[in-house]
Image (cartoon, rainbow, N blue to C red; front, side):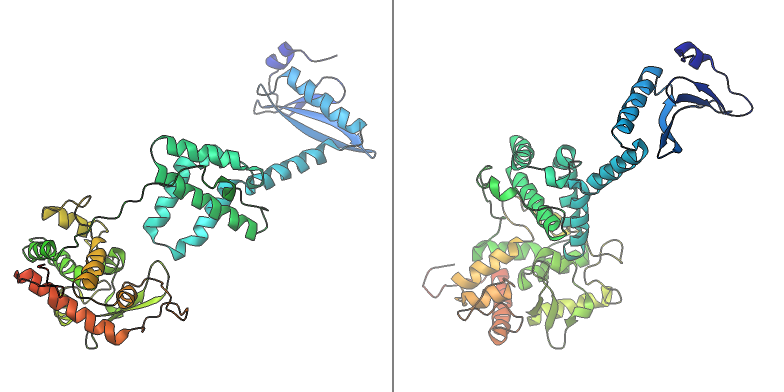
Length: 404
């Protein structure tokens, strides 16, 4: 006799599991714990098998019968429903493993050791906020250019055009990684060229006039913050490296007797050499008495870590400078590049090498750390001496005859 909803609902557990039979191999297994499981008994090649159809009341009688009929249809077509279920599960797992989110996280994790930790966190946060919610679960092979464009337009619509272009770049890199690892065949992002207008580029603020530079140096001289941050402020304009490279400077990379600092450039992972002017060496020797026992030249509150990436900009703001419109820690590079060329008439190629830019010479030779080393040593000392004169308020006259 077929089962009824009432019979199923009122079935009480016993000391042992027992079955309530329906029709065509379907039955309900009632366990001593009170759980009720749907089972389908069937035969394949003369062997009896059982297929689980879920639990009651999550699966009601009507749904259990529909699933039974679907399984019997498969049997009539020569398909083992239990094997079909295993194959379907494997397919779902394979698709999940090839989802955009899984592959993108894998790509970013592999890239993590070659980029700044802050850069990794920003990229991950951007993807989690703006990309994964809409296409993260989609198999990467199913993602089309229009789907990527919809994600980018959603970002652009809130006025974050630069973020939209960053997201596009990261999506494209993920696709190229998937292609390289055999999980995708093409990257749809090149099809979107021009679909999102280019963002307006804004240069980071920097002081580039000798007069303003002199005022800044005098402000640094009067800074009343911590000694570590003050030393960083004094050294930053005289070495003009990237802010992250300065704050993460390690004592073992310095040879104060040779007046040299060697480290790996964060962007290119190439070794760079910074000749140190006498003024910089003097500041470092003084600082060494305080932090020389540790790893970092400019440690943070936790001596095991470098100072915060916001420390220099925060100090500039304390001195009254607007880091959005006047000067940032990165702006010391533009200051040196401009004044060295326009006021001290240093060769652009010498300046570019000191900035650790990956420029090639006339023969196509890429940047190397010892290129123009003699000229760079002389330039760095000339630059430090020039800054001292600016700080002292001396009148600097350009060779062209224009007052500085």
